[in-house]
Image 1: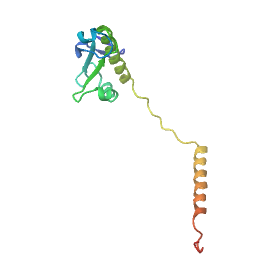
Image 2: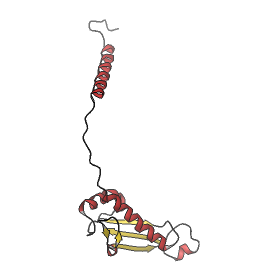
Image 3: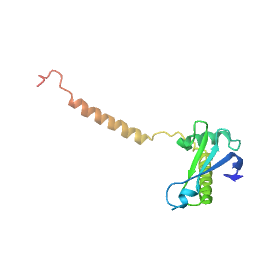
Image 4: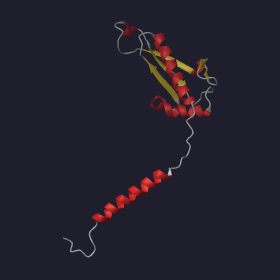
Length: 142
């Protein structure tokens, strides 16, 4: 079990890891050993996630999520397979933790009397400026 929060734990059977060859530093080792990890987690069909967390995870994951609802995390930061594996799991946990936090409730506020007065006074001044720019009625026009 991968512990995410007090209420959410992901079963390790739901997470699939595939080891692929990484680009970047590593000398001859980079051509021989598959050190990069591609972690796949089926968000759409996961029994571990509550519905509200699943929905927020879809929006947070962005283009890392496939059309079928599978979250794909590539970890190739380190030279060793074990470190990349831990990095991928840590990134998954961090993403699910962010999705588990409910968005803050928006409280409606009202503008203060002073701000209303300032706004109306600015509108009056602007209207007066524009009125003075108009051509005078009965003028010869130029």
